Image 1 (spheres, rainbow, N blue to C red):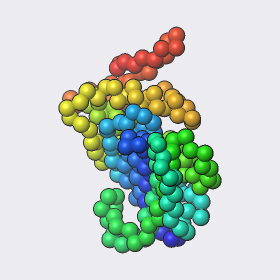
Image 2 (image 1 turned 135 degrees about the vertical axis):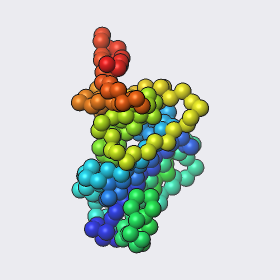
Image 3 (image 1 turned 90 degrees about the vertical axis):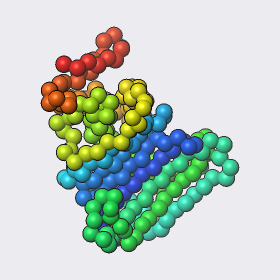
Length: 226
């Protein structure tokens, strides 16, 4: 597989059967994500066609050349609590379609299925873990806006026009926001979620404009609409 032919990078991480994050990043700007990178799993997914977002190029800059050569599928024997790291690459588009309709002539698959308390060490695993965190970090602000739209039906002016949301209709979704922000805070990279609503305007279904304000007073987090 040649680097110039790659058009898709996907990441999938789970603990046991619980989804931590799934991400698909396309060269054409299509972006798909469900999950905040931690537990509990989030039930809201989003897909945007967002040409020029730059995320694919940023990930490609860090993609080691050895990832293009061979598949890797390492499965630890009898893991008590399995954790899975997966990355796939799609290369050489053959049907001329974009996003999920694309078909690839070449693929690369890298997976590590380990016990959560494993003593296994690999530089390849470290690289994949860092790439997953990079992809999450680059898409956090966008995914945050998708969550706000799904939970409050208020759409950010920064959310790409061609965006679709998948969410369970029968569930109370407000806890999803708290779970997402908690995962930002407790991730090793400690992403600053306080900046996610800054400079954004959110529009309700009647076209009214709102601002989302985050505050921390005496160590306690709160938010309100203005």
